Length: 194
Image (cartoon, rainbow, N blue to C red; front, side, top):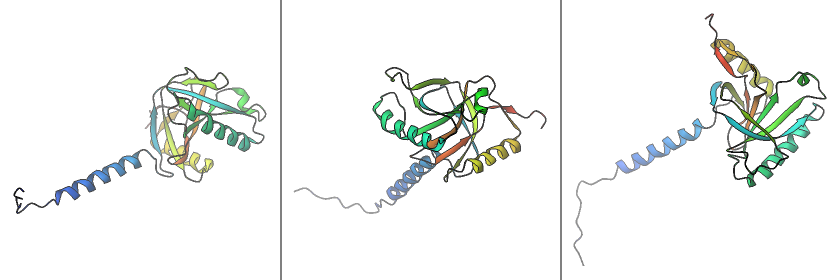
């Protein structure tokens, strides 16, 4: 049998340090993908191709939302172009009918890479690139998150507007992350008076 060489002075103490650094880096990257509760931040979306299920009328909107959520979670996992069935966007059309409770529309959507092979019964739209203020709220408190969004916009002197967009993102649900997050209208610019 061969000789074993005794290594004097060799200590692998750098290996555990490197492993700890790698683990910490990976944990911080995971945290960066999930927003902190009630802390405003700006998100930038490139063009978004969305498919979804409309919920019409404010009457029993909670029940309609639950049906749309379950339908998207169960059906879109079978569609290869869906990017992440657990990340859903709530969008509103920009239309006068939104002021009428019986005609109010909310569309729960998921992002797709392409509309190819998407069943015809899904709602389909493409949203242009946009930057928005976003606040997550682990309890799903729409009003608290909306207030935090509005306060941040005011403090930062941002101008937000739907302009001529047909649809705007009002919220996002990340079922593998922060849960509910409220969106502002798209950011147009900083306030020039400041």
